[in-house]
Length: 449
Image (cartoon, rainbow, N blue to C red; front, side):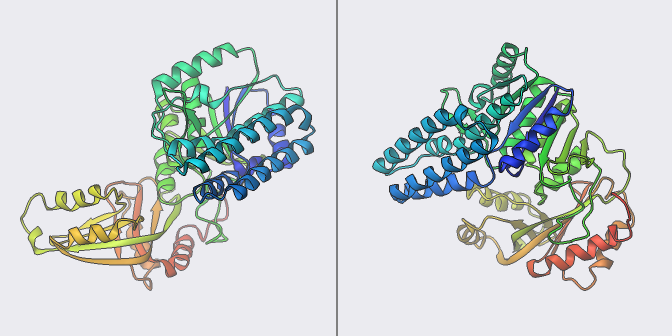
């Protein structure tokens, strides 16, 4: 069995949904289909939540009407409006009543947020189920709240794997006579059956969890690009397809800026060594990118990733000399204010680190200033050269620094991972930096990486 996840752009309109049918119907494999909300619907639902918080209920109701009008238009174009209209109308009225009630109460909890955000995946999965069934596929629908069980950390719930395995295995056994199954990603429920969500990008995670529990042969992530590229084509037009990466390389790419994968996607597949393909819904003949347990391709540099809007925190103090526990004090401050640190570099009397969340920066600086001198450098970007075996290479560092000899580098981090060489530059030099590195490592290539 294959698990195939289709992202928001892959189900954005009737033409895209017809392409989904073409893909799944063209193969002889039994397929479990996981879908995201239609493109931009989650953003629209977030806007709806904002209007509710502002008690602009008339505007909120107008947003709800537009969401359902869009879905009904797509259903009409697919020829299934009659089959789905009653379901849509009930969900619309439920959402309007819910929005008005929240407006009266004047409070929107995270539990309420999850209920609203789940609507996107519930609408798209039911719509796609009805359409695929109308095309003659032997297909069953599974409500994601019945099969993905989580804790009660609303808006960013963690999957409860034992409960999920029990629920999914039972439901799947009941529907074993079908050839296709469809559900919405991103959505689950807690022990009280309250609706939860897995956070933005969680549809990939849902698909990976399902693949892991059911022992799928392959997990496919269908999106709107040919696969993982050597870098962002918006920055570097010469970016090329990477045919194969390891799980570790893919995880590093996701963590350091690649937009194709949600970082959590990797783990459940890794645990069962299930191959993951990243494929293009609109170019299904492309080979895509294979993410496997170990990449046999020995090319040292696989891709260049980056993250914008980074701040460098430089901490300097002579008290560090010969004193144990100083680093612990520093990181306790970041922990106290729930601020994640990305890169770290240390010397005898200084620590440089990067963060991407400035919400509590003033409080952090205030407490750090009690034990050190603090300097903040904002408007920066992390650039990461990623590939297996970087640490064993004797030439990678020299090639990077030689290519960037006219670019000022503010921080370097290497060693914690042998597949990631990261450094910090000013954000206004990011595009130049990425293109120089891409030309250095891929400029002479004529084929796929």
